Image (cartoon, rainbow, N blue to C red; front, side, top):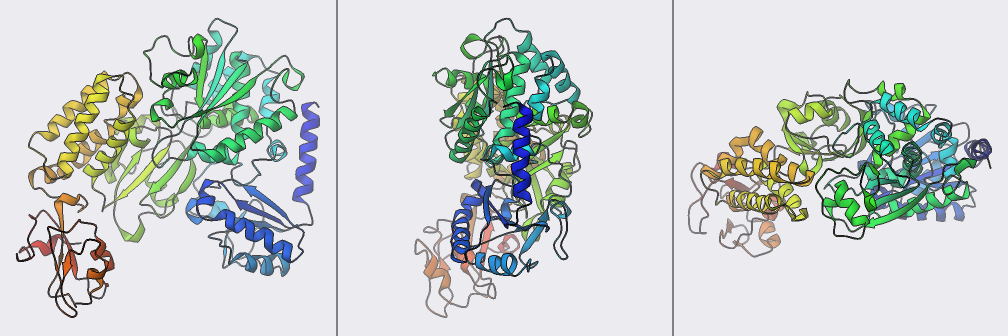
Length: 639
């Protein structure tokens, strides 16, 4: 079939589906939905409509972004807006079927929003919600809307029109269009995509490779996974366009094996592409041939670095190698190779479907377009978001994220994953783009964004992130291997109460050595959490070292739990819940915590009834025996 015939067929199917007399039920079954019980909800929906003999379309879709509201179920009836219901459980399903599908009561009390065109009284539109109002969805525009396993859904909504357009252009014209867009690599480095493509296009040789970097390994990051689970064709179309532009005939998707659903949906998508002549030899009747293979990674964080990924694809140990030569001229198997990450390829599709000027209309002068972020941590609304470059951090944390839960204070936000920096409240008004984040000591990274509240210890947070990068170091560079280990030992001493004068300055010295002496970006950016927490929260380091006190009352060796005699009612609740029997006392008698037995788990504080509030968490005091008096002046330091 020609592309026009494919497009006509897909649009006919889509219109018949959208205008069907049957109700349409959409269930979000991406990983976030599944972890919240979406598959149980899906099974209950099938059972309910079968029992009632209701003829309905039931479709699995991906993640729309509001992961904290999962499981999500949308219901659409002919002539009515599509309504999204949040926190759906199997027990709620019969209500939705009876009240809306059967009796036409949309249940505004259970609804989150409407999606797409049209409104219903009492139910806001998706983009009227605070979380979505500031967003501009380009890479994520189909996520949660279409069936990722149905190629016709993608094609009917503009899919592969960018490829069809590209096949009528010269490679130079395509690269020029990407250049007009100002697109920079979304994998972390932010290198101009068009420049990277031009290097590979101009490299001599007839055998060239395209690689999609889907080796997302940052703690708290799930942008690539969600995109592949929700709209794999957007990424695959971008790869085809890039391959045609640089002259590649083979491509690889390097995706970690821990993403089984993403891999499953990728394989389905590749099979459907071959059925339509969109992959393989003489694509859409042209002289362009391109083949894609999936390579499952073993989960090594360092393989996100492009030269380590190339070695892994070659069957070698994933370790970076020195550049030059750069992969654009000598990469996989010594051939010119272009590597971009999942989000970059998705943006390529959008640019060719629309235009470079359209994409460049978003963002800032040097950071064009939008950026996806996995918003996580101590924030009210967590999830997957996409915002224009240049948006303020404050707008992301407070307008989109809803601020800090339980009325606590904002303390910091870490951008860029474990290699990023921790930025304090004084930086909340900086624009989120490559230049401003770098000036503040952080990085854009692939898009992880973790919010910390006032109860977070910044020294312990730096220790946590450094423990990750140290464990993931391939060990090739002495300074990365030994330097990060030495830094981690110092941070462990500080948080453990055995920090020494001079440790902070030694950390700074080690940070600079590791940054300058590491071969790849893992070592070059691993010190960022330490550098930024010392830069912005040095007083916390000094309290740990000089006063043996953790201001956030997090570090176990620097805190103690006591029972306040004037508040203890002798209810026995804390004693019954203590896992190590460290609490003694009879019924209606004042209880005492044995400091030698106490493991600092905090269960006593959690279970003590709020009407008593008899357990105190103290920082900065020496451990006591049960016979010792509670230290005078400690009450001002309790939680």
